[in-house]
Each structure stands twice: as structure tokens, then as C-alpha cells.
Length: 409
Image 1 (cartoon, rainbow, N blue to C red):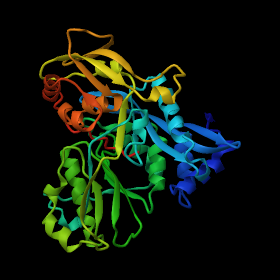
Image 2 (tube, rainbow, N blue to C red):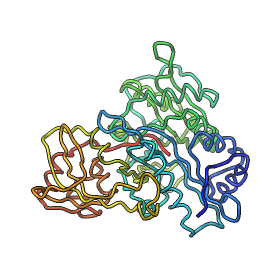
Image 3 (cartoon, one colour):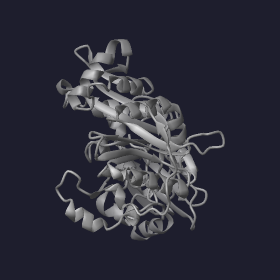
Image 4 (tube, rainbow, N blue to C red):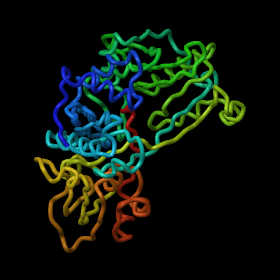
């Protein structure tokens, strides 16, 4: 595979063609795509002298309890119709992850198109996200919204600053380049935002960005909902409720730590009455995000757990090495480690004959470390095994909040 850095003068039209062929680019969205690619690390693979595969990544952070770790965000992997089944996508993605890991990314994350594909380079599936679709008049919030300010794509800088300052929980991902938020706003059909500038100098503190194909009655799709306090969240819910005089349906991702059904009047009745209609009420769950550790000692050095300490040998398998053909400064995380998990965690190369052995793929261990599922559960469904006593000790220690990325990419 021939690969190189993206060259806008040479590759712009080819990249537009790739995105149209995969159905990701509609007429009028070219500016958004150009902005997104320009602010990213972009690699292309050539076929017959033209770019036929594109992978883009952005720098970001992922929150682990109270720590923010450097994150490589794989924001797009696209292959043209004539370059399918050449392994361009998986090889180019591996190279992009390796380049970011070599520059200090401790973790990499992406949104998958189907389960299993990115497992080939060590990614493991994160937890379920929930999307709630409801009539805004159903909301039973105990507050009234103030008059908001309008937000448009021209406000992208303040919107991005607001996203950076949002309330974040365990697993929250943040993409750092402001131009990515600008591009995301431009992609949205009939996009608009509403929010409040309650910061000490008028900074935007809480807002949502929304789109629709039917401005009159919806459905409206909330792309993101940003707040810093519970009171701000409730005000945004009240603001969404105020749209209900005209809008019949709104779709919102459930925020971390919140059960939106608590705020809905008669959710089961509405779901049954609207079934199979244009304005059907739904509660959907899916796990479409994946992540992988890129630097095990680096991640565990930032891991501080309560509730005791567990030490064990870890034999870590990482399939990305063979895909990279074991070239370059970073070749994955495979190997034997002595791992300590507790208030002061760590991982050192080697083996201690006195300790029990845990065997895991890097994807499965990433899921364990993030708290996606307990060790005893992962031993049933994923590539993780060890003595029952060790698995149960890990279950007791790694009682973490559900990791919630809270930023779609």
C-alpha cells in the first residue's frame, strides 16, 4: 500500500469523491469537510496515482476518573468504491494510530461502522449510549427557561469553548481543535443553537446544537447538549420543552449520570400510541464507540483507584503489530507486564512467578480498565482469562462509573 500525507491541492476533489461514494457528503457540505480534514492529521492511500482511501485523526483527551489523558481521536475512515477489499482502511488506520501514539497519545478511540472490524487493530467496544426520542411537551422539568440567545455557525469559537468547559464524567472525550466544532455545526441540516452566556464575562455556559429536515414540526435532532451544572441541564430541558408548541418530536442523547425517562410524562403510553408513525417515540441503546490503550504504563501511571490493591502478571496480546508489519517507532503494546492496580497503579515489563496470570487482548483489557464490563463478564464474552479469584478481585476493585464519551466522532 502506498500512503502519504493529504495534500489539499492534489487530493481535495478525490477526497470529496470518496465521501460522496460512501454517502457521507451531501451537496453544500464541502466546506465542512474541507475544514475537518484541514484541522486533522490526514493520511491517504493511493491507487493508480490517486487518493482512494482517507483516514483522519485529531488530538483530544479522555477523562479517567479525575485525570485527563492524551487521546487520539480517529474521526473518519473512508474508502472509495474501487479500493474495497485491499486492506487499505485497516492498514491506514493502524498507521494513523501508530503516528499519534508515537507522539504521546495514551489512548485511541473511534466510532465503528460495524462490530469486529477495528478489533483487528486492538480496539474494544465501549458501553451503550442511549438516545431518547420524545414529544417535548412530555417533559416535566420543574423550572422555566429564560429567553435564550440564538447561536449560528458564526459562533463556532464560543460554542467550542463551551464544549471544552462542559461537565465531564468518567470516559468523557474532548476533541481539541475548534475547527472541528465549526465543521460539525456546518454539517447539520438546518442547524441552529440556543443557549445562555452566564459566564463572568458573558461566556457561553450551556447550550444545545440541533438540526432537522422538517423545520415546521420536526423531528429535531439534538447533536449535542452542553452544561456545567445540574441547574443548567434542567434549564436546557425546559428550553426544549418550550419548542413543543410547534415541534412534535425531539431526539436527545442521554447525558452521563442522567436517566431522561425520569423527566418524561407517561413514556410507555406515548411509545405505544406513536408506534410506526412519523413521530414515533423511542428509547434506543447501542454501543458504537471503541477504544484501545496505546501506552499501558502511561495509562496506569494516571490510574488511581480506591478500595485496595491488586497485583498480577499480564500477558497482553496486541494485533496491531502485524498489521504495521512491525515497522516504525511504535508497534503496539504486546508483551508481559507486572501490573499493580490501586491508589498508585503501574505496569512494568517482565513477570513475577509469585503472582497470578491474566491473559487479555489489548481491546479486552482496555474495556476492563475503563470499567465497560467487569472482569468476570469479559471472561465470558471477550479475550480475557485468568484464575477465578483474580477475576473476582478485579471486579471488586474496578467499580467505576459507566464510561460515557459524550462527544460523537
